[in-house]
Length: 257
Image (cartoon, rainbow, N blue to C red; front, top):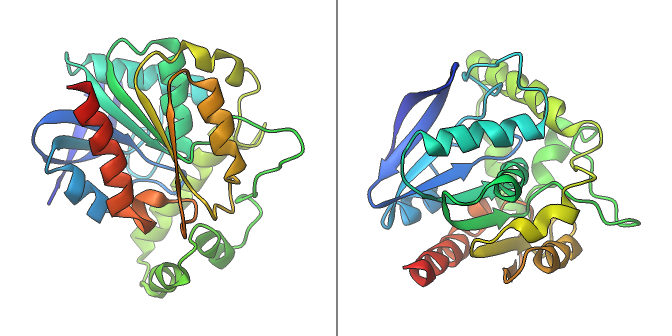
């Protein structure tokens, strides 16, 4: 179980889910905004204090005018981590993985480990990603999952007016970070060698947003990193394969002790 709290760093207050106990694990969410407390968080909370902030600009979090790009988001989370006064295990999904990588190439001294779950952020020439900015609402959900029964359940859930407003706010925020150039930073890949912390990259084999070939490119760029390809899984392994995802993160934690 988790509690929704608020957390202020600098002039920015964000909503945050928090649960479990142990070493702090900071989970940076993807472009769809603050997730519900997922089964993967229950698994992780048996080993960590799990912190899931809602990015500035998303949902009910503050939207500071100075936050204009992915670099600003990465620097914000460096301040966020430093405010805790102790190192964290950092996990990022998609957009959150991109922010985590941008953070780590700048300064990874406050990180105990890094786990990237199908991150955005780089581009392979001739291998274009999917484009969730032009997908329709149902297509956007279905293209995230290999197991379409998950998409069926999500599409069948009623959406309140408040939920719809929060989702629209999150979509605008995602556009700010990922619209142009589409979901990547042309300079990021050449700085991945600066990530000196133990890193695991987890990728669904059937990812329709960022093809699985991107996993190897990330692995080649980050020295000593481990790449894990998850079969029968789409873009969101934390949702579709929570057991596999949690085991990969926990195994890395055990190796850092």
